[in-house]
Amino acid sequence: MADANLFPGEAGFTPRPAWQVIEAARRQYLTGELTLSTAPATKIFMRDGHVYFAERSTDGTLPIRLMMEGVITRQQMQRAMVIVNGIEHVGRMFDADKSIDRASVELCAELLTDDVMIDAANTIVDGYEMVLYRRHPSGIDRWYPHSVPVSGRHNEPQETTSAPTHVAEPPSPAKAAVKPKGESTGEPKNRLNAPPITQAVPVTAPVAASAAPTHVPLPPISQISPITTQIPVTPMPPPTAQIPVTAPPTSDEVDASVIADEVAEAIKRAFAGMGAG
Image (cartoon, rainbow, N blue to C red; front, side, top):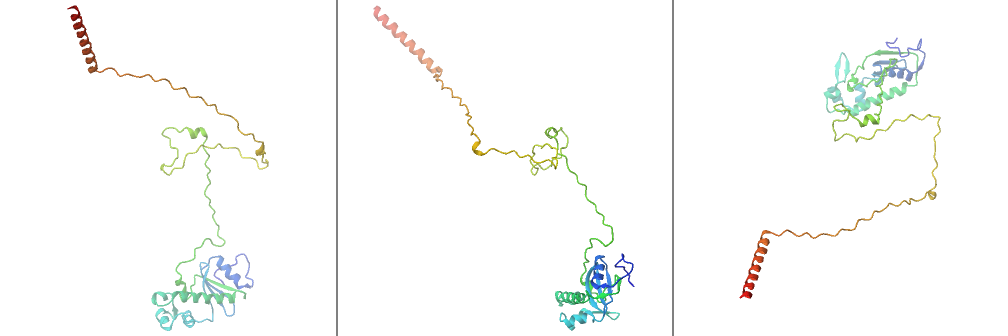
């Protein structure tokens, strides 16, 4: 009898290795207790498809096994263990006794789980029982408060939504050159970080896949004639003669020349009078 059908595609369960039953429960991300019909019976405890502990029906309680492995002492076990309805609960072990080495205890529990899983993996089982949401009685699942993220569950439809792909058409050169006044052009407001405006590249029709590429052979370098075009040089015009520029006479110079003319005229008149006498 099983609370969950791990093989819904089959009419009835057929004997198979135990690892196939375990993987079927893990692929469905189940949480609970999986009991396999081995000798002795094997119990696998899962949380969202993750196996956090495994044990045989003949194994002792977890606190006693941890003390026998040497990861905790008897005094630590007494302080960290809580007995509820005859069940030794260690879910609050690390909070009750800070002296317990958590890394050693968790590693010991993982090694105990691996031994049981390896021993039961290839055993042929003719039945199983899956009780959903049943925890390990010791409360070991409380050591791992964070559940495993579930990306998807088995046999559930997966919605695939893809964002629409929009390819912006490049503007034509005429539209890129003329921008109406007051119309938003879509350019970034921050001009300091804005990309440089480049000339729009015209869109050409795609080349058919069957068309063979055309290769134009280039002539060898020895056959390329050098450039002999000469640039005409226009001679510069000869320098023109400079015309001396004399400054106009000042008012003092004009007065001095007038006085000199009057003195000369007076001297001429004096000599003329002396000649007449």
